[in-house]
Length: 277
Image (cartoon, rainbow, N blue to C red; front, side):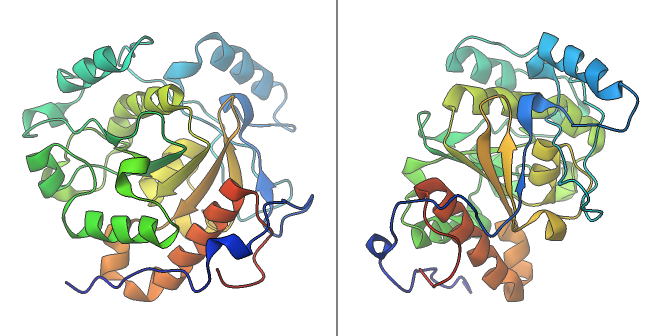
């Protein structure tokens, strides 16, 4: 089907487990779901108080690397209009299944909650359900799902070991790009899923996932190659291209492989890139 096998060139055991004090990729912190707004006349403090009061209804903002004009990180938290259960998985899944907070519930076959190990160390975030996902009720199926499975296999992971969820839980008609209001409404469910899983690393695939989790409008090409910290638990977050984009643009697979290697190194606290895996 045109999906090549992703595999490492060398065994994982050759990489030492010590992580040096300096990594070659800049670190961008996204602490406490707020932006560091040093020059905005106290606006940052106001956002900080609001976010700390109710952290689950706001999109995660991040502090762009100081002096890096290529980053355009949003400084305005996004309020979700849905009530997010703060207890267990069953209640959250039931709420998502019955959600009618946005018009997408009228055209979906079913909601797509998420799948995988609920105690996973890796959390994979996608954009929105497509036709196959809408029909089967599971994220990342079809050709994009097959490619994702191969990408994970390339860094030694099986699908069953990770947790996978989309920003949106309902399919946009015609697989169009999610609207900002849909992301604002539905994205709070994703935030709660991440809080419940408490992973050790997040892999954001595609612009919608990356921009939602970082509260950013920066193009994905500029968000790649960096390590971010998500939320109050400062979970490492790495950005890469969505598998469906890679199917359309196979020449970008090399960059996606670099992203996976970066994520693997961060997770295993291995040295910066200097040799092939």
